[in-house]
Image 1 (cartoon, rainbow, N blue to C red):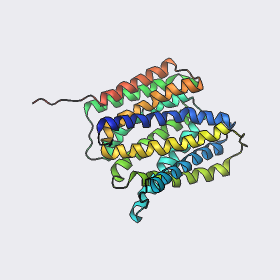
Image 2 (cartoon, rainbow, N blue to C red):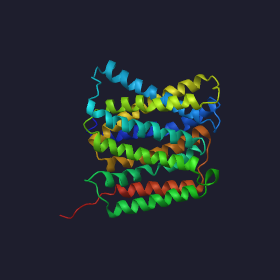
Image 3 (tube, rainbow, N blue to C red):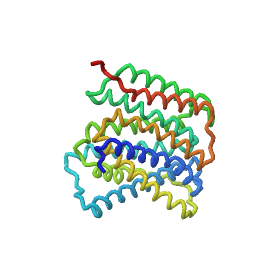
Image 4 (tube, rainbow, N blue to C red):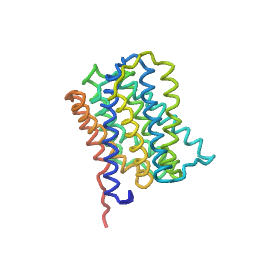
Length: 302
């Protein structure tokens, strides 16, 4: 089955969203398993760094020794790959792991629902073939209202910079880096992008984590397994998603990012026992409807 087949690509995209959605309860569970307090920033960076270093090793082993594909980087590609590694992995996940310490998983998932709309905005700004339309503007306006409603009340007293602000900033960086890959990385094989971004982007997280860590982690077999699971999530989802975006429209398939907060909210409630408040539910619904508006087909008259 090929990703050029649209139903196959849609199924693969939804699989990616389920994997990414599972990361929210996974990370929160790791904090509890290793007894990491909210003020231990170093331990959070170290968890993120280990996860993505393992991801890079997994992708490298799979493509080089199982698929027997050549894994080499041309000299002219290093600048782009280093930029993606520092934005997509180092900066984004510094903010993401920090933010999750100060907000609940359900709320983080709702904030991430804005990602699909950010992809649309940045596609128009950064890709010449994309343009604003009435439905895009309407969707962005409704999604913004949803984000405001979600953070006006809800959990943990509304909006804080170190919690919800960090998650939102992480979401912006994620959308920006995905458009960069779509625009500038089309001629670079997806495995190369994944391997370099994971291995290079994880190193600053690991170094900073070791320097700033001030908690002795409690031994947890389940916690160690969860770190390797996190590596699998990123290795699989990022590589598959990059392949999808190279074949299909980023504006169209960006729609499926809306399933990350939907699945993430469900998993946070099931795994973490969190509650979806009325304001969060309304905010999520606004973002879901906004993303649906983006995908209304306009039929031209003959």
